[in-house]
Length: 63
Image (tube, rainbow, N blue to C red):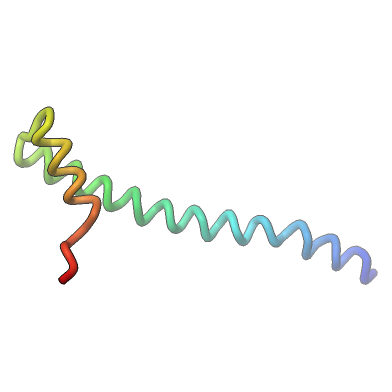
């Protein structure tokens, strides 16, 4: 019985890690969506868009 519990725990651990990684990716994906939306509203193209996206994804400047 203890053997089965240990195996179940070992199999569940990677799933918990995977879920945490997915949540972190979701935050980055949301940031990317927001920046893309803003760039589209400003009708930015080429180098202007690249510069804007870089600044936007970095977030607000910290002092």
